[in-house]
Length: 359
Figure (cartoon, rainbow, N blue to C red):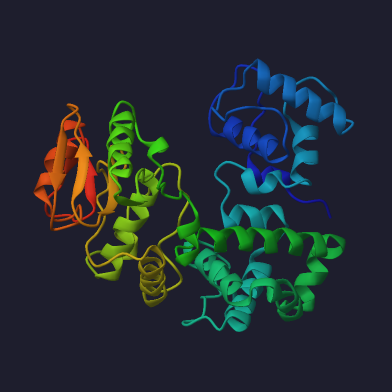
């Protein structure tokens, strides 16, 4: 039987439309590498032009209007994962899972994922069942599909009929995407911090570059470990530490626009373990990173500065300053004074930290 498109409540969108449905459509086109540009939730001339191009390429009526026929083709190409407001329950209804089939799915996930406790097989695939789905995929990874295929009952397979295999493919990809949202060590790869002065904000960038040139010209060894830290990275570091310290619960972590991370796993112990894994992956201690700092504003540098013998360095006023021991930038106030002449100020209690104002 055909999938139940009506379960998705897809609105007709065209030039002049705005909102989440347009955002979803734009993201789908962007994923297919159409030259859309940015995603802004506004169906303008560019979105209309790209929509017509998509329709022409797929043998559809090329009118720039996204309705039944265009949605039908797009859903078969992965648009289902971008549908605005998509929930697991809506997805399963779209795939023609009735109450009995949902119950069977819940039982199957408990069995193949060794979920503790088992999912309640009530036919209501809500948040807890969605977390169970993600956890099962995390445990099984690429063996998720064959194991689920083996576990689902013949009655479920018979109900879905010839669309069963396609439905299983869609459910598997949906589970993979849900798993990818779970917090854990893998998030250290996203929103990477910079260790380049080039990524600092102007005019602090030029001041830091001038100070570093003076250091290098004087023979100092300079090692930069951090300059710009994206706010999303600071957010992850902050809440991973708070969770690891048990200062908050997973459900208390607020969301952040632009980062689709799920802190609440199937159980609290699993959530706390994921936070602990993140703390280790970020290589941070027990103090939470500031959500807003000079690093997130691109106005700070973490510098390791050392030298041998006496450092003869030219300050920002052109004068030569002789600096002896201690021969490192963490502890030598005379070097801090030189940095200040360039507009780069040392934060005394944070060994490597220099910034636009000493904070």
